[in-house]
Structures are given as structure tokens and as C-alpha cells.
Image (tube, rainbow, N blue to C red; front, top):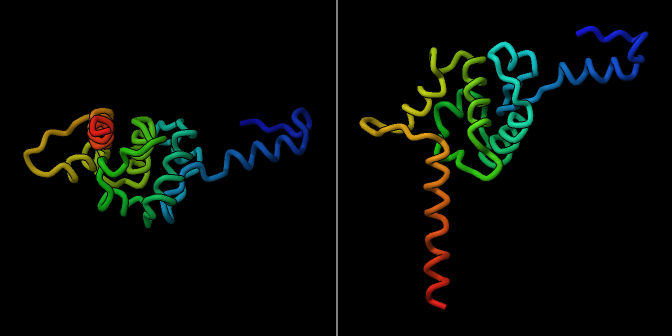
Amino acid sequence: MDLSESLLGKTVARQLGERAAAIVLRIGSDGFDRAALARVACFNFAAAANLSAILNRELAVQDTRDVFDRIAPRDLALPRLGAVSLAVLGAAFEAKRIGGDAPLAAWARKHAGTGVAIRTFGTVKHQIARLDKRPRRTARRRR
């Protein structure tokens, strides 16, 4: 990108340069800037920020390999984390060359177990939400 200081101004050009080089996805000790994600055709930087927050604060992962090995898709069925964030995670796997040609599917298969059909992330989130609401409905009926 042409960041002409004479046209944009020194401050704006510097800020845009810093933003381009900043880490937008942090998974434990691994950091991904916009260029690293763009190399694997990922441009969902807001979803990357949500994914970073959840993986680092709520799940305390070590790095991208740790997510692939230890965290199941079901564990990520959390508020503020949707299918787009999962696609960003797949891009991180791809950027780190974890999981082969289809890293997201390989990750899902790894945690699904043998003979279990892989479901969409939306289906998993709806199932978990339905299970979470079941005790509340029972409590309401008792009142």
C-alpha cells in the first residue's frame, strides 16, 4: 500500500503502517498479522479479534497446535464466537501448516471420534443452547 507522507501526512501514514503490521489474531504464543492471514485468504479481522479474546482469556491456550490437539469444536460453541471465527481458526491452522490440505475438517474429525458424523458449527451451537435452556424450562413449569 502506498502510504505517501506528503499526501496523507506523517501521522496518518505512520498509523496506517502500524495497523498493517499489528497482530490481529493471537493464539497463545502465536501471532498473526493482516498479511499472514491474507496469505491464506482470510480477511475477517473482527472475527479474529473475538477468537483471540476467547482462546486466550477463557480457554488459556498455549499456541495454535495446542488448539488443534486439545480444544474440540464443541468447546468453542460460545457466545460471540460463530462460524466466521471458526473459519479464521482454520486459516490460522493453514498458516501454521497444521492439519494438512483441509485443516478445519481434519481438526473436526480428530475431535469427533470414529464413526461420528461431523455436524456444522451452527448445529452444534444450537444443540448446546437447547441443552442449556432445558433446565430453565423445567424450573419455570414447577413454579
